[in-house]
Length: 454
Image 1 (tube, rainbow, N blue to C red):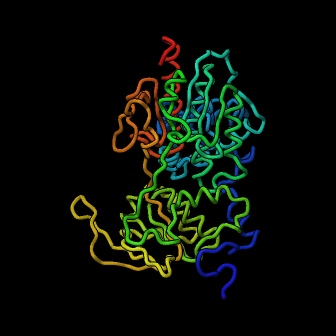
Image 2 (cartoon, rainbow, N blue to C red):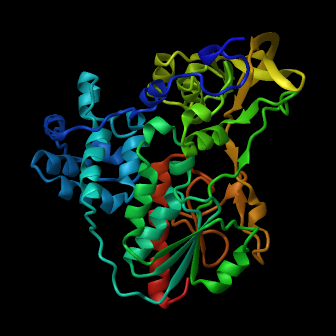
Protein backbone atom coordinates (compact mmCIF):
# COMPACT_ATOMS: atom_id res chain seq x y z
CA UNK A 1 0.00 0.00 0.00
CA UNK A 2 1.30 3.44 -0.89
CA UNK A 3 2.13 5.75 1.99
CA UNK A 4 2.81 9.41 2.46
CA UNK A 5 2.49 11.62 -0.58
CA UNK A 6 1.02 8.93 -2.83
CA UNK A 7 -1.73 7.51 -0.62
CA UNK A 8 -4.77 6.60 -2.68
CA UNK A 9 -8.08 8.28 -1.94
CA UNK A 10 -8.68 11.25 0.36
CA UNK A 11 -6.09 11.23 3.11
CA UNK A 12 -4.07 13.44 5.41
CA UNK A 13 -0.42 13.35 6.37
CA UNK A 14 0.85 13.45 2.80
CA UNK A 15 3.76 15.75 3.65
CA UNK A 16 6.24 16.37 6.44
CA UNK A 17 5.54 19.04 9.05
CA UNK A 18 8.34 21.14 7.54
CA UNK A 19 6.74 20.95 4.10
CA UNK A 20 3.35 22.04 5.45
CA UNK A 21 4.92 25.00 7.24
CA UNK A 22 6.86 26.05 4.15
CA UNK A 23 3.91 25.60 1.79
CA UNK A 24 1.60 27.74 3.89
CA UNK A 25 4.03 30.52 4.74
CA UNK A 26 3.26 34.13 3.80
CA UNK A 27 2.61 34.43 0.05
CA UNK A 28 3.89 38.02 -0.04
CA UNK A 29 6.38 38.54 2.81
CA UNK A 30 6.18 42.05 4.27
CA UNK A 31 8.52 44.80 3.16
CA UNK A 32 11.12 45.84 5.70
CA UNK A 33 11.77 49.53 6.43
CA UNK A 34 14.45 49.94 3.77
CA UNK A 35 12.46 48.09 1.11
CA UNK A 36 9.41 50.27 1.85
CA UNK A 37 11.44 53.46 1.44
CA UNK A 38 12.93 52.26 -1.85
CA UNK A 39 9.56 51.16 -3.22
CA UNK A 40 7.76 54.32 -2.13
CA UNK A 41 10.39 56.37 -3.97
CA UNK A 42 9.20 54.82 -7.24
CA UNK A 43 5.82 56.58 -6.96
CA UNK A 44 5.33 59.65 -9.15
CA UNK A 45 2.75 61.05 -6.66
CA UNK A 46 0.43 61.77 -9.57
CA UNK A 47 -2.11 64.53 -9.42
CA UNK A 48 -5.55 63.06 -10.16
CA UNK A 49 -3.92 59.67 -9.66
CA UNK A 50 -5.48 56.79 -11.63
CA UNK A 51 -4.65 54.35 -8.82
CA UNK A 52 -6.85 56.28 -6.39
CA UNK A 53 -9.74 56.29 -8.85
CA UNK A 54 -9.38 52.52 -9.25
CA UNK A 55 -9.62 51.85 -5.51
CA UNK A 56 -13.20 50.99 -4.46
CA UNK A 57 -12.59 52.71 -1.11
CA UNK A 58 -10.90 55.74 -2.74
CA UNK A 59 -7.82 55.69 -0.51
CA UNK A 60 -5.51 58.63 -1.23
CA UNK A 61 -2.75 56.35 -2.48
CA UNK A 62 -0.21 59.02 -3.53
CA UNK A 63 -0.54 60.66 -0.11
CA UNK A 64 -0.06 57.48 1.92
CA UNK A 65 2.96 56.49 -0.19
CA UNK A 66 4.49 59.96 0.19
CA UNK A 67 4.04 59.67 3.96
CA UNK A 68 5.96 56.38 3.90
CA UNK A 69 8.72 57.96 1.82
CA UNK A 70 9.09 60.78 4.37
CA UNK A 71 9.38 58.36 7.28
CA UNK A 72 5.82 58.70 8.56
CA UNK A 73 4.23 55.22 8.41
CA UNK A 74 1.81 56.07 11.23
CA UNK A 75 0.46 59.04 9.28
CA UNK A 76 0.31 56.80 6.22
CA UNK A 77 -1.78 54.25 8.10
CA UNK A 78 -4.23 56.95 9.16
CA UNK A 79 -4.65 58.04 5.54
CA UNK A 80 -5.50 54.42 4.69
CA UNK A 81 -7.78 53.77 7.67
CA UNK A 82 -9.68 57.02 7.10
CA UNK A 83 -11.14 55.37 4.02
CA UNK A 84 -10.70 51.66 4.73
CA UNK A 85 -10.56 50.47 8.32
CA UNK A 86 -9.82 46.95 7.04
CA UNK A 87 -6.86 48.23 5.03
CA UNK A 88 -4.56 45.63 6.57
CA UNK A 89 -6.48 42.67 5.19
CA UNK A 90 -7.20 44.40 1.89
CA UNK A 91 -3.45 44.91 1.48
CA UNK A 92 -3.11 41.13 1.67
CA UNK A 93 -6.07 39.88 -0.35
CA UNK A 94 -7.06 42.65 -2.79
CA UNK A 95 -6.46 41.78 -6.44
CA UNK A 96 -4.34 44.93 -6.75
CA UNK A 97 -3.09 43.69 -10.10
CA UNK A 98 -6.56 44.38 -11.55
CA UNK A 99 -7.31 47.50 -9.48
CA UNK A 100 -4.85 50.18 -8.35
CA UNK A 101 -1.66 48.59 -9.67
CA UNK A 102 -3.14 47.85 -13.10
CA UNK A 103 -3.59 51.56 -13.79
CA UNK A 104 -0.37 52.71 -12.09
CA UNK A 105 1.58 55.01 -14.42
CA UNK A 106 4.67 52.88 -13.81
CA UNK A 107 2.73 49.80 -14.96
CA UNK A 108 1.51 51.53 -18.11
CA UNK A 109 4.96 52.93 -18.95
CA UNK A 110 7.28 50.17 -17.73
CA UNK A 111 5.19 47.08 -17.02
CA UNK A 112 6.22 47.18 -13.36
CA UNK A 113 3.80 49.05 -11.09
CA UNK A 114 4.54 50.51 -7.70
CA UNK A 115 3.79 47.74 -5.21
CA UNK A 116 0.85 49.59 -3.69
CA UNK A 117 -0.56 46.59 -1.84
CA UNK A 118 2.71 45.75 -0.10
CA UNK A 119 3.25 49.41 0.83
CA UNK A 120 -0.24 49.53 2.29
CA UNK A 121 0.51 46.43 4.33
CA UNK A 122 3.75 47.98 5.57
CA UNK A 123 2.02 51.09 6.90
CA UNK A 124 -0.98 49.35 8.43
CA UNK A 125 1.21 46.68 10.05
CA UNK A 126 3.27 49.38 11.77
CA UNK A 127 0.16 51.07 13.17
CA UNK A 128 -1.47 47.82 14.28
CA UNK A 129 1.71 46.48 15.88
CA UNK A 130 1.84 49.65 17.97
CA UNK A 131 -1.93 49.52 18.55
CA UNK A 132 -2.14 53.09 17.33
CA UNK A 133 -5.78 54.17 17.52
CA UNK A 134 -6.75 57.16 15.40
CA UNK A 135 -10.44 57.50 16.21
CA UNK A 136 -11.44 58.35 19.78
CA UNK A 137 -14.87 57.16 20.81
CA UNK A 138 -17.17 60.21 21.11
CA UNK A 139 -19.90 60.63 23.68
CA UNK A 140 -22.60 57.99 23.07
CA UNK A 141 -25.57 59.30 21.15
CA UNK A 142 -27.99 56.87 22.74
CA UNK A 143 -28.82 55.46 19.30
CA UNK A 144 -28.48 51.72 18.69
CA UNK A 145 -27.79 49.88 15.45
CA UNK A 146 -27.91 46.12 14.77
CA UNK A 147 -25.46 44.73 12.24
CA UNK A 148 -26.14 41.27 10.83
CA UNK A 149 -22.85 39.60 9.93
CA UNK A 150 -19.31 40.27 11.15
CA UNK A 151 -17.70 40.13 7.72
CA UNK A 152 -15.92 43.02 5.99
CA UNK A 153 -19.13 44.97 5.28
CA UNK A 154 -20.47 44.53 8.80
CA UNK A 155 -17.18 45.39 10.50
CA UNK A 156 -16.67 48.48 8.35
CA UNK A 157 -20.23 49.65 9.05
CA UNK A 158 -19.89 48.99 12.77
CA UNK A 159 -16.62 50.90 13.08
CA UNK A 160 -17.92 53.93 11.20
CA UNK A 161 -21.11 53.95 13.31
CA UNK A 162 -19.05 53.69 16.50
CA UNK A 163 -16.95 56.64 15.31
CA UNK A 164 -20.17 58.64 15.26
CA UNK A 165 -21.03 57.60 18.83
CA UNK A 166 -23.74 55.05 18.12
CA UNK A 167 -23.86 51.73 20.00
CA UNK A 168 -23.54 48.74 17.67
CA UNK A 169 -24.47 45.11 18.19
CA UNK A 170 -23.06 42.70 15.60
CA UNK A 171 -24.89 39.38 15.32
CA UNK A 172 -22.67 36.75 13.68
CA UNK A 173 -23.79 33.20 12.89
CA UNK A 174 -20.31 31.65 13.00
CA UNK A 175 -18.14 31.04 16.07
CA UNK A 176 -15.66 33.74 14.98
CA UNK A 177 -16.01 37.21 13.50
CA UNK A 178 -14.35 38.15 10.21
CA UNK A 179 -16.58 36.56 7.57
CA UNK A 180 -14.69 35.50 4.48
CA UNK A 181 -11.55 37.16 5.83
CA UNK A 182 -11.57 34.48 8.53
CA UNK A 183 -13.18 31.58 6.69
CA UNK A 184 -12.85 32.13 2.95
CA UNK A 185 -9.34 33.38 2.16
CA UNK A 186 -6.44 31.07 1.34
CA UNK A 187 -4.31 30.37 4.40
CA UNK A 188 -1.11 31.60 2.75
CA UNK A 189 -2.68 35.04 2.19
CA UNK A 190 -3.51 35.63 5.85
CA UNK A 191 -1.00 34.08 8.24
CA UNK A 192 -0.46 34.47 11.98
CA UNK A 193 -4.18 34.74 12.77
CA UNK A 194 -4.27 38.19 11.19
CA UNK A 195 -8.03 38.19 10.58
CA UNK A 196 -8.74 38.00 14.31
CA UNK A 197 -6.05 40.57 15.12
CA UNK A 198 -7.80 42.93 12.71
CA UNK A 199 -11.21 42.28 14.28
CA UNK A 200 -9.71 43.15 17.68
CA UNK A 201 -8.15 46.31 16.25
CA UNK A 202 -11.40 47.44 14.63
CA UNK A 203 -13.55 46.79 17.69
CA UNK A 204 -11.11 48.36 20.15
CA UNK A 205 -12.70 51.74 19.39
CA UNK A 206 -15.44 50.70 21.82
CA UNK A 207 -19.19 50.71 21.46
CA UNK A 208 -19.21 47.50 19.38
CA UNK A 209 -20.57 44.27 20.87
CA UNK A 210 -20.12 41.09 18.82
CA UNK A 211 -22.44 38.17 19.60
CA UNK A 212 -21.33 34.95 17.90
CA UNK A 213 -23.52 31.96 17.12
CA UNK A 214 -26.52 34.18 16.36
CA UNK A 215 -28.12 33.37 13.00
CA UNK A 216 -30.83 35.47 11.38
CA UNK A 217 -34.01 33.47 10.90
CA UNK A 218 -32.96 30.90 13.50
CA UNK A 219 -32.12 32.79 16.68
CA UNK A 220 -33.91 36.04 15.90
CA UNK A 221 -36.02 37.63 13.19
CA UNK A 222 -35.47 40.80 11.20
CA UNK A 223 -38.72 42.12 12.68
CA UNK A 224 -37.13 41.82 16.15
CA UNK A 225 -34.21 43.99 15.07
CA UNK A 226 -36.44 46.61 13.43
CA UNK A 227 -38.47 46.81 16.63
CA UNK A 228 -35.56 46.86 19.09
CA UNK A 229 -32.95 49.00 17.30
CA UNK A 230 -32.93 52.42 15.71
CA UNK A 231 -31.44 51.05 12.48
CA UNK A 232 -30.34 47.74 10.97
CA UNK A 233 -27.49 46.91 8.59
CA UNK A 234 -27.56 43.58 6.75
CA UNK A 235 -24.14 42.23 5.79
CA UNK A 236 -24.64 38.49 6.05
CA UNK A 237 -22.95 37.54 2.80
CA UNK A 238 -23.91 34.47 0.78
CA UNK A 239 -24.97 31.22 2.39
CA UNK A 240 -25.98 29.06 -0.56
CA UNK A 241 -23.77 26.95 -2.81
CA UNK A 242 -24.50 26.58 -6.50
CA UNK A 243 -24.97 23.01 -7.70
CA UNK A 244 -22.82 21.33 -10.34
CA UNK A 245 -25.97 20.20 -12.16
CA UNK A 246 -24.18 16.98 -12.92
CA UNK A 247 -25.33 13.41 -12.32
CA UNK A 248 -23.82 11.82 -9.22
CA UNK A 249 -22.75 15.03 -7.50
CA UNK A 250 -23.93 13.65 -4.15
CA UNK A 251 -21.12 11.07 -4.17
CA UNK A 252 -18.71 10.95 -1.26
CA UNK A 253 -15.74 13.13 -2.22
CA UNK A 254 -17.67 15.96 -3.87
CA UNK A 255 -17.09 18.96 -1.63
CA UNK A 256 -17.96 22.65 -1.52
CA UNK A 257 -14.68 24.54 -2.05
CA UNK A 258 -15.70 27.29 0.39
CA UNK A 259 -16.21 24.74 3.16
CA UNK A 260 -12.82 23.17 2.35
CA UNK A 261 -11.09 26.55 2.59
CA UNK A 262 -12.90 27.33 5.85
CA UNK A 263 -11.87 23.99 7.35
CA UNK A 264 -8.28 24.57 6.29
CA UNK A 265 -8.25 28.07 7.81
CA UNK A 266 -9.47 26.73 11.14
CA UNK A 267 -7.19 23.67 11.22
CA UNK A 268 -4.55 23.66 13.95
CA UNK A 269 -2.69 20.75 12.34
CA UNK A 270 -2.59 20.74 8.54
CA UNK A 271 -1.38 17.14 8.46
CA UNK A 272 -4.77 16.10 9.79
CA UNK A 273 -6.61 17.73 6.90
CA UNK A 274 -7.39 15.09 4.24
CA UNK A 275 -7.06 15.82 0.53
CA UNK A 276 -7.35 13.63 -2.53
CA UNK A 277 -4.46 12.28 -4.56
CA UNK A 278 -6.10 13.41 -7.80
CA UNK A 279 -8.26 16.50 -7.36
CA UNK A 280 -10.55 18.24 -9.84
CA UNK A 281 -11.86 21.75 -9.13
CA UNK A 282 -14.86 23.03 -11.08
CA UNK A 283 -14.91 26.82 -11.46
CA UNK A 284 -12.96 29.82 -12.71
CA UNK A 285 -12.86 32.33 -9.88
CA UNK A 286 -10.59 33.13 -6.95
CA UNK A 287 -12.20 30.41 -4.82
CA UNK A 288 -11.36 27.81 -7.46
CA UNK A 289 -7.73 28.96 -7.51
CA UNK A 290 -7.51 28.99 -3.70
CA UNK A 291 -8.97 25.48 -3.42
CA UNK A 292 -6.74 24.11 -6.17
CA UNK A 293 -3.49 25.67 -4.96
CA UNK A 294 -4.12 24.66 -1.36
CA UNK A 295 -4.94 21.09 -2.44
CA UNK A 296 -1.53 20.97 -4.12
CA UNK A 297 0.16 22.47 -1.05
CA UNK A 298 -1.50 19.81 1.14
CA UNK A 299 0.15 17.14 -1.00
CA UNK A 300 -2.30 16.30 -3.78
CA UNK A 301 -0.37 14.72 -6.67
CA UNK A 302 -2.54 15.99 -9.53
CA UNK A 303 -4.85 19.00 -9.39
CA UNK A 304 -6.88 20.17 -12.37
CA UNK A 305 -9.18 23.19 -12.63
CA UNK A 306 -11.92 22.81 -15.24
CA UNK A 307 -13.70 25.93 -16.41
CA UNK A 308 -16.60 26.06 -18.84
CA UNK A 309 -15.36 29.10 -20.78
CA UNK A 310 -12.02 30.42 -22.03
CA UNK A 311 -9.08 31.83 -20.11
CA UNK A 312 -10.10 35.39 -20.92
CA UNK A 313 -13.47 34.82 -19.23
CA UNK A 314 -12.09 33.61 -15.88
CA UNK A 315 -12.90 35.77 -12.87
CA UNK A 316 -9.57 34.83 -11.30
CA UNK A 317 -6.94 37.43 -12.12
CA UNK A 318 -3.93 36.72 -14.30
CA UNK A 319 -1.74 36.72 -11.20
CA UNK A 320 -3.92 34.09 -9.54
CA UNK A 321 -3.90 31.92 -12.65
CA UNK A 322 -0.10 32.20 -12.82
CA UNK A 323 0.09 31.32 -9.12
CA UNK A 324 -1.88 28.15 -9.79
CA UNK A 325 0.37 27.19 -12.70
CA UNK A 326 3.50 27.88 -10.64
CA UNK A 327 2.21 25.43 -8.03
CA UNK A 328 1.66 22.68 -10.57
CA UNK A 329 -2.09 23.11 -11.06
CA UNK A 330 -3.40 22.39 -14.56
CA UNK A 331 -6.13 24.72 -15.83
CA UNK A 332 -8.34 23.36 -18.60
CA UNK A 333 -10.89 25.50 -20.39
CA UNK A 334 -14.13 24.93 -22.31
CA UNK A 335 -15.21 22.01 -20.13
CA UNK A 336 -18.36 21.62 -18.04
CA UNK A 337 -19.23 18.79 -15.62
CA UNK A 338 -21.63 16.16 -16.94
CA UNK A 339 -21.37 13.19 -14.57
CA UNK A 340 -19.51 12.35 -11.38
CA UNK A 341 -18.31 8.77 -11.58
CA UNK A 342 -18.47 6.86 -8.30
CA UNK A 343 -17.38 3.40 -7.15
CA UNK A 344 -18.88 2.14 -3.92
CA UNK A 345 -20.41 5.57 -3.38
CA UNK A 346 -17.03 7.31 -3.57
CA UNK A 347 -15.75 9.56 -6.35
CA UNK A 348 -13.46 7.81 -8.82
CA UNK A 349 -13.64 10.24 -11.71
CA UNK A 350 -15.60 12.94 -13.47
CA UNK A 351 -16.97 13.06 -16.98
CA UNK A 352 -16.90 16.50 -18.59
CA UNK A 353 -18.35 17.84 -21.79
CA UNK A 354 -16.51 20.19 -24.10
CA UNK A 355 -18.23 23.54 -24.63
CA UNK A 356 -18.21 26.20 -27.31
CA UNK A 357 -19.96 29.47 -28.01
CA UNK A 358 -23.06 29.08 -30.15
CA UNK A 359 -23.69 32.67 -31.11
CA UNK A 360 -23.80 34.48 -27.78
CA UNK A 361 -24.69 31.36 -25.77
CA UNK A 362 -22.49 28.66 -24.27
CA UNK A 363 -23.43 25.16 -25.41
CA UNK A 364 -22.13 21.64 -25.01
CA UNK A 365 -20.56 20.06 -28.08
CA UNK A 366 -21.47 16.46 -27.21
CA UNK A 367 -17.81 15.49 -26.98
CA UNK A 368 -16.68 14.30 -23.58
CA UNK A 369 -13.56 13.81 -21.51
CA UNK A 370 -13.13 11.68 -18.39
CA UNK A 371 -10.63 12.58 -15.67
CA UNK A 372 -9.61 10.23 -12.88
CA UNK A 373 -10.33 11.87 -9.53
CA UNK A 374 -10.92 10.91 -5.92
CA UNK A 375 -12.00 14.41 -4.87
CA UNK A 376 -14.05 17.05 -6.69
CA UNK A 377 -14.47 20.61 -5.44
CA UNK A 378 -17.42 22.79 -6.39
CA UNK A 379 -16.23 26.38 -6.82
CA UNK A 380 -18.92 27.70 -9.13
CA UNK A 381 -20.17 30.49 -6.94
CA UNK A 382 -22.46 31.05 -4.00
CA UNK A 383 -26.00 32.32 -3.82
CA UNK A 384 -27.95 34.48 -1.42
CA UNK A 385 -30.44 32.62 0.79
CA UNK A 386 -33.37 34.99 1.36
CA UNK A 387 -35.26 32.58 3.63
CA UNK A 388 -33.54 34.10 6.67
CA UNK A 389 -35.35 37.37 5.99
CA UNK A 390 -38.74 35.77 6.56
CA UNK A 391 -40.51 37.07 9.63
CA UNK A 392 -39.59 40.65 8.86
CA UNK A 393 -43.24 41.65 8.88
CA UNK A 394 -42.70 43.09 5.42
CA UNK A 395 -40.87 41.84 2.37
CA UNK A 396 -37.49 43.19 1.33
CA UNK A 397 -37.26 43.74 -2.38
CA UNK A 398 -34.78 41.51 -4.19
CA UNK A 399 -33.11 41.90 -7.55
CA UNK A 400 -31.52 38.95 -9.36
CA UNK A 401 -31.75 36.95 -6.14
CA UNK A 402 -29.99 39.46 -3.89
CA UNK A 403 -31.11 42.41 -1.78
CA UNK A 404 -31.92 45.52 -3.78
CA UNK A 405 -30.47 48.76 -2.38
CA UNK A 406 -30.27 52.36 -3.48
CA UNK A 407 -27.08 54.41 -3.88
CA UNK A 408 -26.81 54.83 -0.08
CA UNK A 409 -27.40 51.18 0.72
CA UNK A 410 -31.03 51.59 1.80
CA UNK A 411 -33.30 48.60 1.26
CA UNK A 412 -37.03 48.74 0.52
CA UNK A 413 -37.69 48.37 4.26
CA UNK A 414 -37.59 51.45 6.46
CA UNK A 415 -34.71 51.47 8.98
CA UNK A 416 -32.85 48.74 7.08
CA UNK A 417 -29.66 49.09 5.01
CA UNK A 418 -27.51 46.39 3.42
CA UNK A 419 -24.07 45.93 1.86
CA UNK A 420 -21.47 43.37 0.83
CA UNK A 421 -22.03 40.17 -1.11
CA UNK A 422 -25.72 39.92 -0.15
CA UNK A 423 -26.71 42.97 -2.23
CA UNK A 424 -27.38 43.15 -5.94
CA UNK A 425 -24.41 44.61 -7.76
CA UNK A 426 -21.75 43.38 -5.35
CA UNK A 427 -18.52 42.15 -6.95
CA UNK A 428 -17.48 39.72 -4.21
CA UNK A 429 -14.40 41.73 -3.23
CA UNK A 430 -13.44 42.49 0.35
CA UNK A 431 -12.56 46.07 -0.53
CA UNK A 432 -15.94 46.68 -2.18
CA UNK A 433 -17.77 45.24 0.84
CA UNK A 434 -15.82 47.61 3.08
CA UNK A 435 -16.80 50.59 0.92
CA UNK A 436 -20.46 49.57 0.98
CA UNK A 437 -20.50 49.06 4.74
CA UNK A 438 -18.76 52.38 5.34
CA UNK A 439 -21.06 54.33 3.04
CA UNK A 440 -24.21 52.72 4.43
CA UNK A 441 -23.04 53.64 7.93
CA UNK A 442 -22.70 57.27 6.89
CA UNK A 443 -26.24 57.14 5.49
CA UNK A 444 -27.52 55.61 8.73
CA UNK A 445 -25.75 58.30 10.74
CA UNK A 446 -27.30 61.06 8.65
CA UNK A 447 -30.73 59.53 9.17
CA UNK A 448 -30.25 59.14 12.92
CA UNK A 449 -28.84 62.61 13.48
CA UNK A 450 -31.23 64.53 11.22
CA UNK A 451 -34.40 63.54 13.02
CA UNK A 452 -33.40 60.87 15.49
CA UNK A 453 -35.10 58.21 13.40
CA UNK A 454 -34.02 56.10 10.46
